[in-house]
Length: 102
Image (cartoon, rainbow, N blue to C red; front, side, top):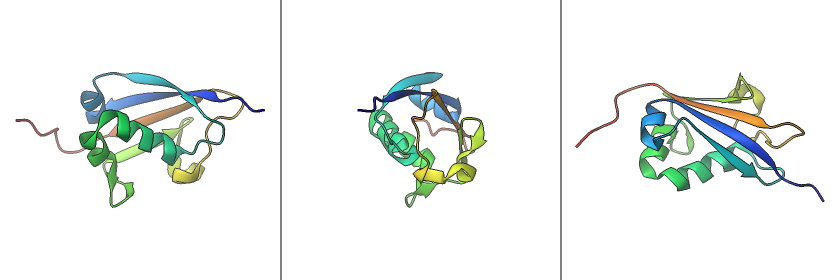
């Protein structure tokens, strides 16, 4: 029976201000996709986080997701499988308009 692995998620730029931390270390189920991981993070951090990452189900133009140092689009996009023999690293970078304030 395969056991899960871990993934370190680093937040850069505006997204760090939204989540209020530099990184998370998360346990992954076997065969977790990058898309599933990002949806879990949206559930954890709420609609503002999701708004900066997704637009109509796709990554926004201001969001860049790196998977083990390479652009996620070049690694299979949202369908890329996480949780191999080594710890995965996902870096979420959001550059763009400032976070709206009250």
